[in-house]
Length: 548
Ligand code: TEU
Ligand code: CA
Image (cartoon, rainbow, N blue to C red):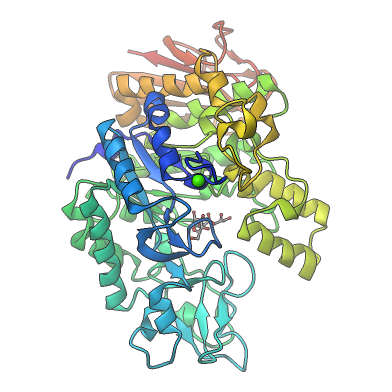
């Protein structure tokens, strides 16, 4: 087994919002193809493509109705094959999204399964009898409300951990697993380079969570048969190809990651953990305007760094299609100078840790959150459902409070069109875009940053070059400095020969460094022109110093 996943720098493309290639207002595969040279120039060598399969249009492609077809809005299978070839010709690999915890209720399997209780595919999904005329138990959907939905055909309930139209597959049924493995091999035989596995820690659901007793409401993640299924998938499929795999696993502690992402190669290459995405949650989970506490954020990330070192492999991310824009969330978009500095600082802080970095489209430009005015503007089933529940049904939040929460944490923030240029619709489309472009595209866009050596984009390029030149970034161990400090995130990476010192100021006020964290060695990269004082970081400053 090769370990190119350790050398990878992944660029995530959300195709619907990346580049429109045929003038219908929606991004597509031809559009991605037009922008391959941009991704190549950035220095990334892997593309993670969010779902482009046929779907029912409810959850951004995560409601798949046919795993072997490309959705018409994205193009054709020929377009996909052309994209794969064009990417490979440039030395770029393509990792596809694998969404197999659930299918769309329009998938052929579900259409059969729902027909009658004795249908041959009944067991492909999770069906339960009503409890006292209502839902089987109290299990809740990630997208608000009950996780159970009554189906008229049989009067039984099916499980949907996400939207009503996303029915959970029953992985305990061997024919489901075989069907999924077949489909995976079919894609891998086309030459794709791996999978990002959607909520893969939900497939081994504990039976106790699914009992129709009117009560159960337990966590279904990392269930008792979880690793059995992943190991089987590894044996049957993954181990037979030279690919990269990353599992999406919210609610997973490092101890579990040691199994999922063990360097022994028996399961996956790495996982996306979520603990650092949860430090700014509140009473209603993600729906809060809280800022992350820096000591907490550091404690979480340091724990993942040290717990996995030498045993398993980390993924590194601030942003993806489900998260608010990191510069607005952990840095500052208050004015242009703070935005540019803090976007670079966040990049340096993340990219110098151990693991495979993921860059989400527009993050490399310092794209910001979207100033959404009303819920009517939202295109996201998660936000819309939460609005109905928290504002309209339960009156737990006022419309103003919920709008503020959506503006600071909602997924729409990540899904506004990519800002390519100052032209109409940011150069994303000639038509009316499916989702509004952030009005700040006039100043924040790729064309403007490409020629500017001080841009956020140029800084990302420099960081990736630095990674390629300094093996300590890949292999070194991690030590957190100043753990309690409220402003400074500083750490070292050491491989015995070289020590990297990374010091970041997560605030707009000057910050003192202690002796260990004070600048020494040779400056590899920073976000200020002048060297500054050794023991003080300026507003949003970051430094990367190397000692041999
Ligand atoms: O996300 C799963 C997940 O646990 C969360 O990130 C969730 O979507 C939400 O953002 C929490 O606030 C994956 C996909 O990345 C997401 O886009 C899908 O909607 C979801 O699975 C269902 O397939
Ligand atoms: Ca299009």
